[in-house]
Amino acid sequence: MSDIQVVLFTSADETYGVPVNQVQSIERLEEITPVPNTLAFVQGVVELRGEIVPVINLRIRVGAQALAKPSDDARIIVVEIAAVHVGLVVDSVLDVKTLDEESIQAPPQLIGGLEARYLSGIARTDERTLVLLNLEKILSEAQEQQLQQVERSIQGE
Image (cartoon, rainbow, N blue to C red; front, side, top):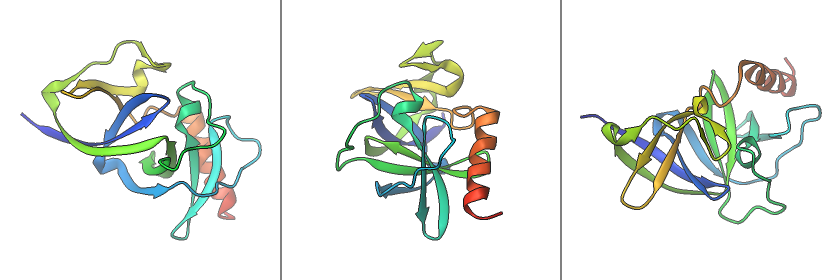
């Protein structure tokens, strides 16, 4: 048996998890600078410790409506997707949990507006059902290229 540690967070009334080894940092929600002509779920960019990071609103990405005013619990989870640091705006960060890999089941074809290819699995714990995101698949190749282009243009490359 093998264990996996995941960062648990909420977005649009759903509990999600991503592997701890893909999380670079968890930041308080700060002012996000909009970038024109980007995908609807790309909220803009933030500067974190001298690095410009594109920010995705996970609520919009999963097909929910963005909040007019995020709560004080909202956070930016900085993850690495296809060699690009990306911030995910989430409603709240709950915990880090260790899951037994055997408790993770294949996802159904569609859950909460997300196609199964965006998920690495569903895990059931005593407290809740967790949707485990596959960060490598949550963005299509074209979207990854656009995020890389946004990152390069902001950095003046």
